[in-house]
Image (cartoon, rainbow, N blue to C red; front, side, top):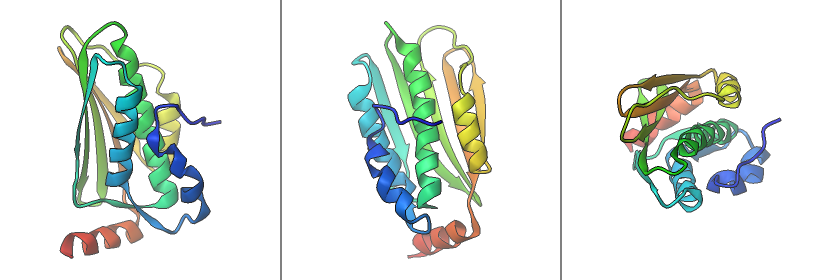
Length: 163
């Protein structure tokens, strides 16, 4: 069972998004709302810096909701690493051909390590035919959600970019 998190600003949209899975929702706006909710719920020592497309990125409403839930889970896992520390989280949304990538990166002083407890995020990503990549180096831990666009989403986004 997937349960909503307190910091997820977009969860209020949940009932609306579930009513008609054929509607297209702007995932960029949805993630900007998520980012605002995360800022409100994050400890003061954490800075969240979004780099989210201004032109929009359309996803079917049921997929947008699940996409937002996965991103929320990734942000929460990285925010949880900040207990008693200062740091920055970068959130970046991009489209590359028929794929959508959302990178959530955690920057801190000192060595980074892997992130455990991503089972829920991985299961949700699978429902989107997506995957989560995980990288870390001396100062950065990055989690990247990648999902393919459906044919309908691809066509709608082409029209959006052309318009």
